[in-house]
Image (cartoon, rainbow, N blue to C red; front, side):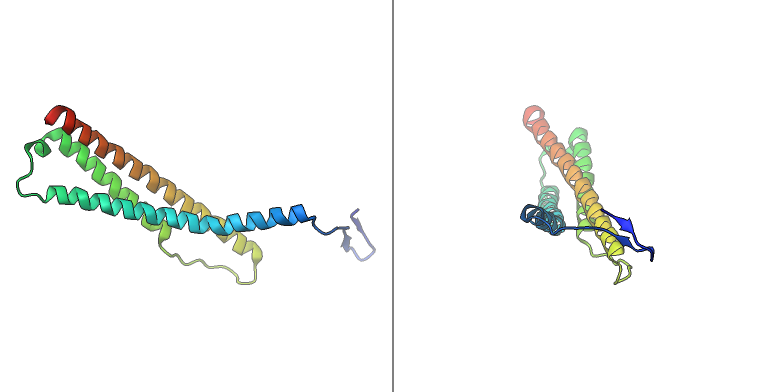
Length: 153
C-alpha cells in the first residue's frame, strides 16, 4: 500500500519478482537486443540479393548481340521499372545498415530508451520498404520473363 509520510516521501511496498516474471523480463531483453541484429541482417541479405540481380540485369544488357525480344517496348518498360525497384531496395537497405550519430545524455536512461526505440523503428521502416521494393522488382522480372517465354519466343 502506498502512502505519504510527514516529509512528503512516497512509500510503496514491493516484493521480489517471481522466477516466471524474471524469465519474461530476460526474454524481452533478448528480443530487444536481437531485434537490431535481425533487422540489420535482413537489410544485408536484401543488399546481397539486389546486387546479384542488378549484376545479372546489367550483364544481360551488356551482350553485344542481344536477342531481338529485349528491344520490345514492353520488355524495356518492365525492365526499367524492375531496375528502379531494385535500386530503391538497395537505397533503403543501405539506409538500414548505415551508422548514424545520435545525441543523448549519457546518464539519462529515458533518453537512451527513446533513442533505442527510434533506432529500431527507423531500421524496421527502412527494411520494410526495402523488402517491398525488392519484392516488386522480383515480380516485375518474373513478369518480363513470362512475357518473353509466352509471347516472344
